[in-house]
Image (cartoon, rainbow over all chains, first blue to last red; front, side, top):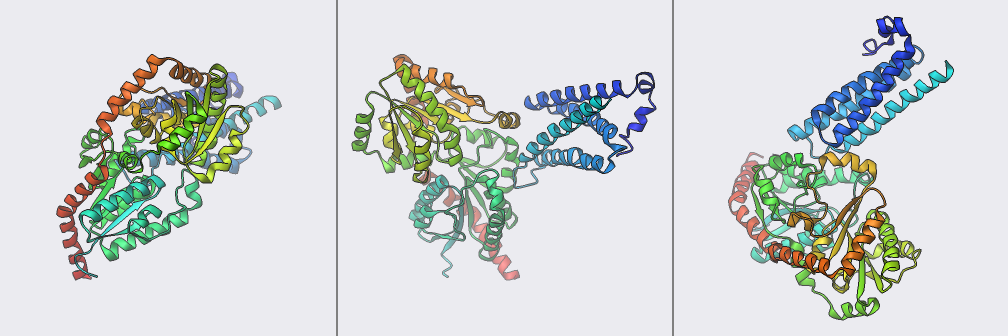
Length: 138
Length: 396
């Protein structure tokens, strides 16, 4: 998982060689923000398929950003972020989807959606703070 | 114990369910004195003859508060399941309180005990996917709103519309005209009642908004007087503390909800069953539900009905102004209240539509109908359960 989103691959890409990591990071943060906005909108209007797509885009962008910011310097922090802000919300969504389709649990699983959204916002916020900190340092 | 005694398990968690459950129990015992009730209920059900498995007097919890009592709920469920296994009741009757009762439904269904759900959760309003759970774990639904019947029928669940037990209770309790006259004397001809709900969270969330709006209504209509409902005396101090900060002519009315409604010219109420009481007394009303912006965002995809007020949902049109508030839309509230107080034509239109609605849904006898349906079901499924019980005991 970590190696899949390792920023090392981006470092060897054409875009990186041509423009440097600043452009890529900016692109990722903007795409991540747009994906977050689109996810919120599609969720609000209950467009399930579009919501799934925008959510995947959000997690890919923010996963790459976290990898860029933390993988080489704070690897444990990176894994904690991945576990809490990617694996846990995705698991919540899968449980909720399974419950709505197969009526598995007596307890209403819709409260899991609250966790998903709290963690989505926090995940983006962490990346944004890391991004801003990096700009200030540069 | 005699073989003729029929043990029925019944469960209700909150106060309104307790009242409806007690009425249902009395009707069932009236029709079949051999029935003996076991289960979960509060003081009304205990008075009606329930042999409680747990003390439910302080269990009416919402949302995260449930987590603080999680171990108690787990223990309660264990005890109920043990009762199902050891005593094999003829039927399990569940009343509202879906968060806990669905656990019991699944447990009973696994043991092949007939499960009857009386006063179903409002799946037609939000979270309609849970209908699959009802279909899996419930044998019969006894619904209290006419539009619920096709909703559940379409999902393939056996369902009967029995009417709303609230109208039985209004009929039984009646209205003390002396108190109504006393309240009217306090208020004059423009009495506005504020009904923020019976739970603490509702009172804290809604009452300050209602009072802010009342200050502006009072500025526009100086003859207006305000009655603040305090349906639970435990919260009198809370209501008093909130209300005393506002400079309007008000009176806090403990209990006496029928009298308070009857004395009013307009009611500002939280969305809930109280709006049906208002409709019964043909009172123009404004329905308010407050939610945080984040809460609204989370809940919006799950909302099924376009209306938050029961009367509007029942009429399938906006007969009483309603608002799902996530900002402080006090000016909207003030405008609607002023119009309903001053504009006679608007008042009359609202009253006429409420009259038409009450003619269709306001019949009494819900508990009687529900009892009949349950006894019919016990006649057929109860025998099967009885066979299963004997087979299990033979095998044991």
